[in-house]
Length: 161
Image (cartoon, rainbow, N blue to C red; front, side, top):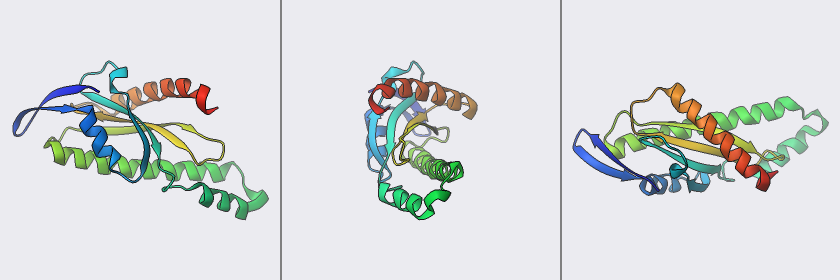
């Protein structure tokens, strides 16, 4: 857990990563959630290791779709699935960003995600979720997400491969 001292329209305040984690944990679309903010050395940025809830893209639905397609399942099916997951996570990220801006009365909160692991059945999606409480370019946030996601993948590979 990390704690940030910030200023908004109402004055100075403190926010800790546990508070943000609790906001994320209330969502039905995020299953596993771990605060890894103290693993990076970036001011005013929080990072969470997440897993998409099975309620979003259930294993049964995916396996049923694969079975229906039979032998015609090819790489394009998985590309479409991945695009669907990315669109879903983008919408989720936008919702969370708006909620955090409202909760903390700050307009410069930015959120970003990066998928770093998908299992062979295409039913388990792990991603990092970043929350920045400073004015930062989205490209910088994207680069940081890529670095953290690679680190998570390397650490997770011994458990998930």
